Amino acid sequence: MKELWIEIDESSPDKVKNSLMKSAAKFCDALLVDSRDVENAKKTGAKTAASSGDCDINVLEIFDESKAKKLKEAGKTVAVKVSIRGRKDEKTVARAVESSSDYIILDCPDWKVIPLENVIAMTRGKTKLLAEVSSAKDAKLALETLEVGADGVVLKTSSPDELLKTAAIIQKPTLKLELVPAKIVKLNQIGTGARVCVDTVDMMKLGEGILAGCQSNGLFLVQAEAYESPYVETRPFRVNAGPVSLYTLASLNKTRYLSELKAGDEVLIVNRQGRVRSTHVGRVKIERRPLLLIEAEYERKRIKTFVQNAETIRLVTKKGSKSVAELKTGDEVLAYVTEGGRHFGTLVKEETVIER
Image 1 (cartoon, rainbow, N blue to C red):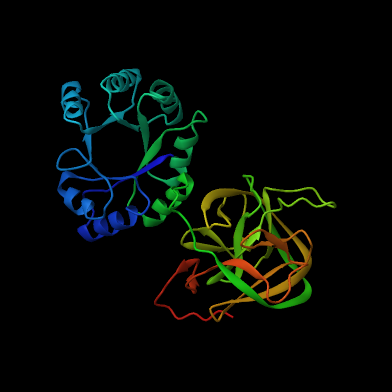
Image 2: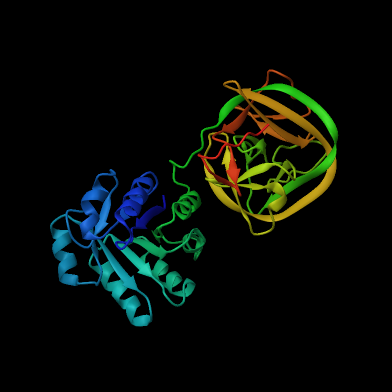
């Protein structure tokens, strides 16, 4: 399992640091903090890493072989920070590996990929390599370099959204959405509309798809076209999601209209268990097709969506999936029911928004 650490900026206000540490404790394997913040970090229950103090992981900002040896002899976990600016710095990595350091935290300020490839090859199976990154985009690159990738990343950010995006890429087991069974109460065939096929750059399995719906507080799990049929080939990279006006979940706390999506944009793939992983749009295909209005209820809350009225579009259920052409009132399908009301895709809890 890849590891996710977060480095908390010591210059941030205490309120910002404490809030970020509390949030990060849900997803991160360790909080890298200044020695003055160790006690507050420990209160979150997460592992702490620092250059001094009563922490779980001792971080050497500059490699000192004798100090690393003493810490290891005392039974301590040791991480060594190394900044790669040339071949001589790779020799420092080699020395740190020889000293049995548990982690190498690598910073590549100039070239990002080639030095990381060299160090991955050097450290593979000998120690854990963590790459310093400042965004989810950089994290994805580090985790895929040389195919096997780094063993994890140290994310340097003060943005909760960037933390969530990075956690989604690393696919932490705790990163889940709660999907609930919503009961179908109404089905209504309507005329044609502009519907969107979202073609991703990834492959999806049965039980996986994207969330889409008319209201931001209720999104249906629409399965990818991975179900085999006698009339059409499977398209496991594609989700026939519905008309252009629907919401979809682009990140854990931001919605997008299907009409806004384009090649390169991020979307979330969700499976039947609510597990989340991030991918990107390869293309969006919009065509005019007959539509079906689906209304469902969960705990007296009514949610709605539109789908193309065709046999190949399937909604995910607890144990399988069901073609929208076979749906009937009383059937249950999986949905993500949450707080509604969005301003440019972001939830504003204090704002009064009514969605019907």
